[in-house]
Amino acid sequence: MLGYGVFSVGGGTPRVGWRDGDEVTDLSALGDVFMQPSLNALMALGRDASAELLAPARAHDGPRFHIDEVTAQLPVQIGDFVDFNSSLEHASSIGRMFRPQGDPLPVNWRWVPIGYQSRAGSVVVSGTDVRRPNGQRKTGDTPTFGPSERLDIELELGFVIGTPSAHGEPVTVDDAADHVFGVALLNDWSARDIQAWEYVPLGPFLSKSFQTSMAAWVTPLALLEEHRVESPLQEPPPLAYLDGGRDWALDIPLEIELNGEVISRSNVRTLYWTMPQQLAHATSNGAALRTGDLFGSGTVSGSEPGTGGSLIELTQNERFLADGDEIVLRGRGLAEVRGRVAPAGLIIPASYGERPIVLPAGVQALRSGNGEDPGQRGGP
Image (cartoon, rainbow, N blue to C red; front, top):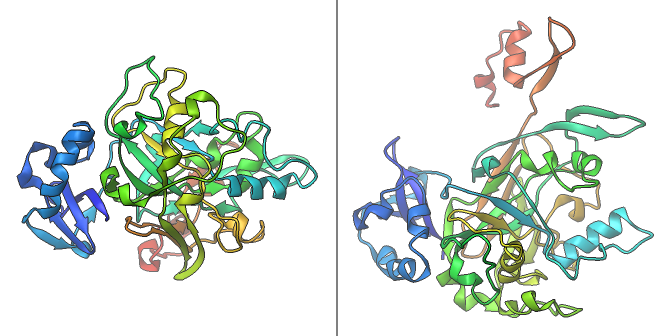
């Protein structure tokens, strides 16, 4: 499958291309919407118009480049970014871990697709390093501030909005697919120690907002029809405005690779809440959709050992990311999401009082007078 993306060659002008395997076809000769630095103009055409362009785009005999010859850009100019928690298995396993004596699920979990508003400006294209975030952590009687020691991943499927909706007019589960342009894998990097301290009472904030990595190539929704299956049974039955959309589970195998080794395999079809239900709930209060809005499924996890979508599940809270670790998320037919962990900036006392100054590690090495050039070490 793969799909549309934005690329440049040799520092040239970004334009829209189609990726098939390891080959990228330049589509700029097909019209203005393909001569843009994002997919937004193409997505804004609407479901029917963009579907009509799909066959010509895939068959276009334009200039072709190997994937190693091109520089991929973030494919979408993102408006809002909403992230859900739609995997029953993920929510349950995390709940059992942190509430061993109680119900692992919040009382509302089976009634409402839980989500939160995240930070669109922190979404980056696959291949971008993730710098270990600083933040408050509580490990003793009082919190401390410093680099996260429990940096984690979250394997997610994202979907992007093409057709906007009017403010005050909810999108129904039956109409949701008319607003969605396509899907892409996401890695919602998470600092678990920062998250544990900050999440009460309003949920994730700085533990999530530092970076989310997105695949460089967006797979159009029209290519996923043959992968549609029925979602898992929902019990109790959803309220009327969410009653539908269960035929939009997607049979797409997923895997997580850590430093060249596959450590997890799962499938998108296990998600409890589907894309139409997520979209119907997100707009049920009248909130409008805009072209380029990004929605994340939340971590995709299975029920069997080795199917977790995060390290906290796979290692039972024992192993997290070290500097230099590289994570690759893959989905059959979808573009991968790749990212390597870079060290946190160092916090040093300022000469003018107690206010801290944050510097990259390489800059601090030069300040120390050892003469080492950070560019010679291959580090950031």
